[in-house]
Length: 159
Image (cartoon, rainbow, N blue to C red):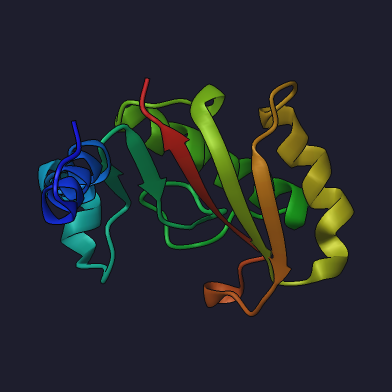
């Protein structure tokens, strides 16, 4: 059976759209259903900082950068880059656990050093927190607030 060319063309177009298009954009639906939560402790809220300690989006947790000072204290821990790295990583660990994750779930870290020549000493302490599965990482030399030697920011999945 030979159909007229306009009908053949119409059938071809309808078939094309059935297989390849004319569906609702799933990217839009995913975006609309994503829930964003801005997380901060009561102490952090009290300080009125211009950022959240962490942000949760779907199954991911994004931590703001932390430096090497003990929670609730204004001074950095004494002892230089190793002590500050250890304290900053303890702070990261605490935040992750408080917000439903852990060091085992970290997928990416960014380490900012006040002096890039501290890279080797920072790594000695940093590796203790990730003995086996090490997240992706970037490290930069930058000027840091409060004279800090290191600031660490992490992204982790939620368990």
